[in-house]
Amino acid sequence: MPELPEVETIARWLREGRATEPPLLGRTITAVEVHWPRTLAAPDPATFAQRLTGQHVTAIGRRGKFLRWVLSGGGVVLLHLRMSGDLRWQPPPAASPQPHDRLVFAFADGWRLAFNDPRKFGRVWLVEDETSVLGDLGPEPLDPDLSAADFYARLQASRARLKPLLLDQRFLAGLGNIYADEALFQAGLHPLRPAHTLSRTEAERLLHAIRQVLRAGIAHHGASIDWVYRGGDFQNHFAVYRRAGQPCLRCGTPIQRQLVGQRSTHFCPHCQV
DNA sequence: AGCATTACCCGCACGC
DNA sequence: TGCGTGCGGGTAATGC
Image (cartoon, rainbow, N blue to C red; front, side, top):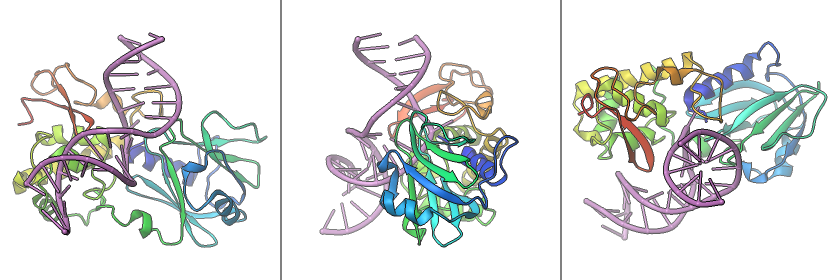
């Protein structure tokens, strides 16, 4: 799934539609099918379907890795695709559900939008107060209001290792495994380095690297590294992720792979000290 | 004790 | 066939 860049991309095409797909904005919801109830974090399926019927989405946004739909009649739908979630438009006439369709939104003109999720990790909420779900998220790395000084202060406040810290959505919202590895490489920082040991200069370098890597990921519509998602081509621009044993693009030293906090982590043992 | 940090685990599909 | 791996994070367990 979709780390931030892909969520950004999905938000864009939900808003604008693609050549062969309608935009989500303004289309009236006539029914909601719940094929896998556990996908709904809240409320219960009957309430969810009843409250959405007759409404339309007036605005689409993103916060961290959450997609955000503002509803005409009040309330907000939040969607998290996790590892294998996907949103798929289905043209009329309505066919039987695809394998792994967990939630299907049906619209007045016959088009349908399916939340498809093989691994069943994805979640959808319908809330009045979105802070109940998004409240603990850290700042947006691409927000210009996040200053280098702020970022340095946040690093100073933590004794955690850099890699797990970058994946902690309370520290920073939206970074995932690929982008954490790529950003640490670009900043020349070792993933096991304790956060509070970074200098101001190193903190500034890291923030800059994070922003650059995220912008590159967005520009390439995310990465397609396995069967889950095949939209973007950022995988062709990885410096370290999934390149274990291959030569570092900067110094030629073989890239190392190591589990850190249960997540596979890739780095150059020479460039990242 | 109380906080911060880390490990386990959740469905499923794929490649070796 | 079996095993390792995974674009994530809630919760239980552990560490300080």
